[in-house]
Image (cartoon, rainbow over all chains, first blue to last red; front, side, top):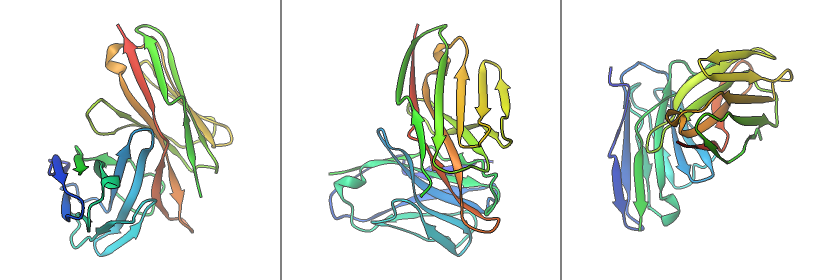
Length: 115
Length: 115
């Protein structure tokens, strides 16, 4: 199994550009989520999904859209990039949704810079 | 909302010294998880604690869950350079009924080990 994969690894955008960060997992996990990591802020949840066709907002959803058309894929879309979105983005998945035992499997991350 | 606070933010130790990081939640947690992130890497699951007062050991790492299930600690005995990284605690956010939709992370403790 490849686990959780993310592309691209690095990206530089100009303010106002849009792009999609890709995330895929091959473990048939129900639960998938997107986090951003900024210095001193820990990992903050952007959006999450408990299954195909079901998504919900996390702590910092503004400026981001998600969709979950398949169990495997959970792309994150930046609608109009802003310098405040410069961050490292992690996708994660868990075997089951809606339960308290949710060990997260993280992807390698995407380092995004918005100029 | 539920908050998970982690201290200290930074810890510098000499190789061979002990290290402890503490995690405190504003609400009672059903369980708590610990993750380690190596520099430039992604968070990796270490352990999950479920029971009040639970203590678990992994070689030189000792994890404790408080009696009230609102705090936790990670203690490393005789640190080594391989222990360098950021240690995060995380607790599931209760979403009603028996459902848990989100994982709230602490800010993390960055451990530096000087040889």
